Image 1 (cartoon, rainbow, N blue to C red):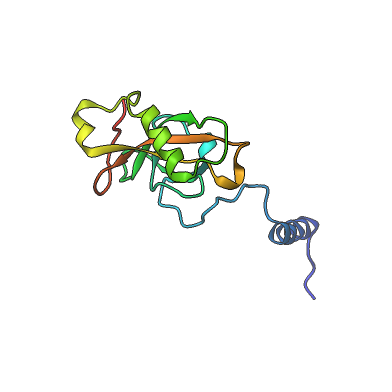
Image 2 (tube, helix red, strand yellow):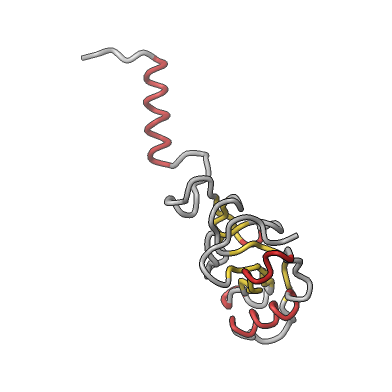
Length: 147
C-alpha cells in the first residue's frame, strides 16, 4: 500500500471537501456563457452595460459592448405604487418615462428602440423597479449606442 504524505493527504481531503460541498468561488448562474460574458441581476446593472439578450427573469448576461448584443442598459424607472399593473403595462410606463430621457447617439437612433425589463409579479409590490434599455430594432448591436 503506498504511503501518503501529510501534504498529499491534506490536498486529497481538501479536494474531496470542495467537490462535495462546492468551492468558495461563486458559481455563475449559467455555465454556458459566451467568452468575456458575466451574469448579473438587474439590480446590479450600470448604465452602459450591454446585454446579450433581454431576460425574462432579471438575470442579465453581459458582454463587452464591442461584441454583438441585444440591448444596452440606460436607467431605472420605479413603477407607481398600487395593484400589480401587469408586465405589459409596467413596460409601457417605463418606456414612456425613459424614452425622452434616454441619450442615444444621434448616429445610432435608427438602430434602437426603448424597451424595459419589468418588475416581477411575484416580487410586487416590494420591488417595483423597471430597467430601461436601448434594444436593437433588428438583429444585434455592436458598440455603444448611448451617450
